[in-house]
Length: 115
Length: 117
Image 1 (cartoon, each protein chain N blue to C red):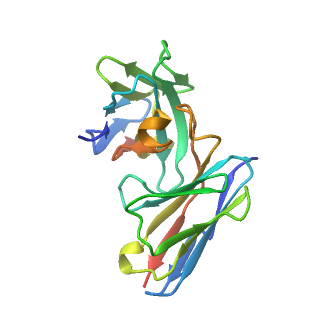
Image 2 (cartoon, rainbow over the protein chains, first blue to last red):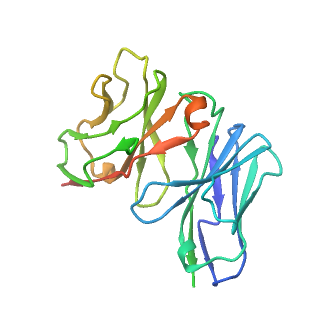
Image 3 (cartoon, chains in turn cyan, yellow):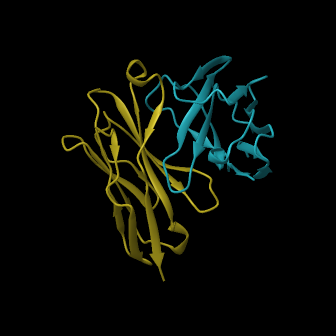
């Protein structure tokens, strides 16, 4: 089945130790998104790629970086995780974000714990 | 003003009964899309149903239907015959014209639904 896969599902890191979360998709979608979601809150968009074009949200901290080496894969790098970065990180894809009917499909998420 | 408002932080429903989750939205666009997602405790956001602003009929997908009232700017989700597996957080989201919001979706704060046996 076509899908969005995130690895790992659970990640524990130490304060200040860099961590990379990965996302892959078999949907062949042009757009990939990274969201941060804290407990019982709406997901917050960090950035998204339309093909190779990178779009950073204005309030995304510099501590968060992303790479998309090809259509299928996208990575979220947290350079120096702080306690406030503990959250669920959701990857999503969509076909073309220029359309109002463009549906996002989400992966299962990576739950990040910072010790 | 919030673009998506979900006024019910938590809802309870008896198994096999119907439940309505409220969503109101705010946009000046004529063309927009409305979505509902389900998020179980496992974390994955699951797409449930979509309604376009120009769609004349309310969207339906199995036990899910969307009660779309354009003049009132509301897009309520109706779940019929609730099941225990419907217990989850539900998010309403809107996608406006690309020129308005650069292709980003706006999410509400969510409603936690608990189905009681």
